[in-house]
Amino acid sequence: MRVCDAMTPDVQLCTPEDSLKDAAEAMGALGVGLLPVTENDRLVGMVSDRDIAVRGIGMGRGPEARIRDVMTAEVKYCFEDQDLDEVTANMGEIQVRRLPVLNREKRLVGIIALGDIAQAKGGDGAGVALSEISRPSAQHAQL
Image (cartoon, rainbow, N blue to C red; front, side, top):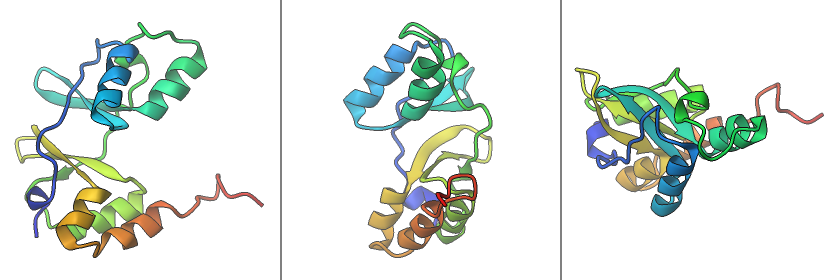
């Protein structure tokens, strides 16, 4: 099975110039916690509800601050024609629950999340990735 067989193709986008308020409202309306950030038809980052809370509000930025100020610019991604099992294993290794999906021209075509994988594979594989994603790293381990 390929990533394109399981991904969510319709993705809400934002731009680096959108406000934190705009992104938070879109997340709330869609029931999601992550939005791709695009500029000139290219993926330039991702913004999460955590980015808004920690890098935005936590750093004293108000609702009119720009996404550019809080987004994660180094984005891990996968390609639509990749094998789903390979991508699932990779998600576990890099400890992410979702990845933007690009075509080979590096244009955003969707997002793949653990929930998409679980639905596509009947729960098979997503549990393995989740167990890797959910394992505490050394810096977060409580002793």
